[in-house]
Image (cartoon, rainbow, N blue to C red; front, side, top):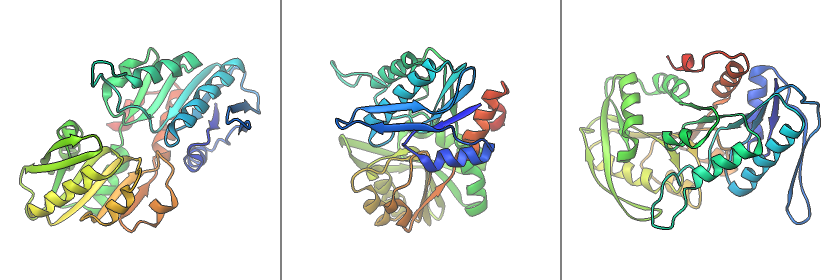
Amino acid sequence: MKLIAGSSNSPLAEAISAYLDIPLTQANIKRFSDDEIFVEIMENVRGEDAFFIQSTSHPANDHLMELLIAMDALKRGSARRITAVIPYFGYARQDRKTGSRAPITAKLVANLITAAGADRVLTLELHAGQIQGFFDIPVDNLIVSPVFIPHLQENLNGDDLCIVSPDVGGVVRARALAKRMGADLAIIDKRREKAGVSEVMHVIGEVKGKKCIMVDDIVDSGGTLCNAAGALKENGAKEVHAYVVHGVLSGKAIERITASPLEKMVITDSIAATDAVKKAHNIEVVSIAPLIGEAARRIHEERSISALFK
């Protein structure tokens, strides 16, 4: 078993390596003067079970291209099996045609990863579950509950919990967590006037006097979460917290979140935390390294991954 780290999230790759007690395989990743990417695996991988760890986070195009080149390098190095470990799968929000001549970029990226030489994909909380069907190779789409539920139970357990979906599309995720926690469920009904701007309309469900926990897969600009937090407070919520898997946090997202009514937003390290994230008083990062590491071990040993979530 070989672990190779891309440049997108070195701290996570090192944490996975420490969990598995397997050193990272040396790789030479550099750019030529015109910004072309070069990847060379510096150790023998012939006949090995290779796992390349790379989130396709900002800059998404560079990190995606690096992933594809690494897949090709491993394939040409005669690795027995190549698993693309993609904690954050970029372009997942473009999973359907939104207009007459719009692309389905998530499918294009799936094709590219397969063509580059990946034999399987290990990822975390895809934006849309049907993206698994875009691949013609096995995809293990992990859920984050083994990380979030213990954190919730340790910090926010009680009879006054209410799990909130910040939009209609996240109801399934919120309902599953509410069932596991034995909590009430509420939904935010919002109308999006244009891309990147959301207007919260009203809250469906009883939140007065409750600790509200919003759950989502991605926080990008932060507008939806912050507006939803304000709506929950206006409806009498005692506290508002958020648990979000992927902290994209682009633009002025951190400023919005630190100035919002959110008591705390918990995100994972699927995307490497910036200095601004580390300094934010109401943002906490929890590690998915044990979850990813255990899933990789089970793939290598041909054992069940679904058993992790029972």
